[in-house]
Image (cartoon, rainbow, N blue to C red; front, side, top):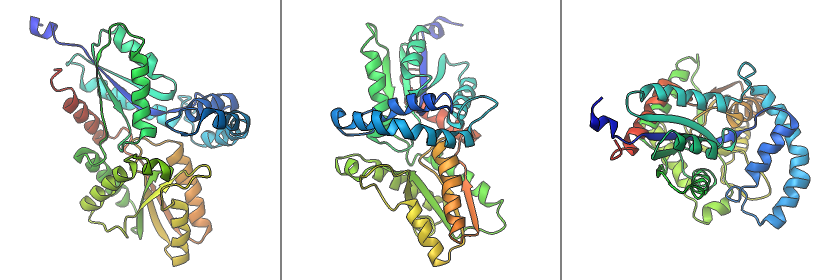
Length: 334
């Protein structure tokens, strides 16, 4: 290796996903929920008002119900949630793509383990003086991407020698993301004997007041939906945008997927598919909420065929997307 190669900066890349409990038991779920729901980016209420509700009511009853849901999807072989399994696979596959380029790929969770702080400390110990943080959220929201950045810079505040940091805003309609989604959807549709009458694009919901306060998330979701319809040749009626995972008394972004599914059954629509373009990896909100809860809702109201189309997960096109995002963002460092 020549001197120029020896002097190249060692670059760290940190993939960050939302988070996961470490187990399906009550206390594992409670610890995870306490960290997640104590984030003021997620719940924009004053602590004196919210914490008594959270610690006294929510964390008393919700962990048991959530634990039952996680048990349905838990990877018992690896003793991890699907989100952790897929995110780790993404990082390990990417590592093989960059073995010759002085690039160290790691993964972390915003809530739970492995933590952002732990993995940033590891990259720093590996002499990575340049670190690219890649939040695995296609659409930007203060409740997701921004809180990852918050935690990154909180960690940096404890460093005397800080690495150079880059972060990614979003990739809502990045050509490689849309291509990966297009392929996944078409691949699944080809397996069906009868094509669905509607393909719902289901995104995680957000309180409407967050959007009114300036969060661009709704626009970001619309960008993804428009790009997908364009490549698949679908209309808004054929491929509507809906929101899921409504929680609490706030008014949330709509239309809500449950309301749309119920209305479809009233109209006599009997064959639908659902895809979740707001998630890079399958998780509780897709595997249990969509593929179980909304499937049950549709079929119990008279629907005949319900197809859940998985996320892009660690598909080769997902790895291509992540590799190209990394290559794009570390220019100037290499």
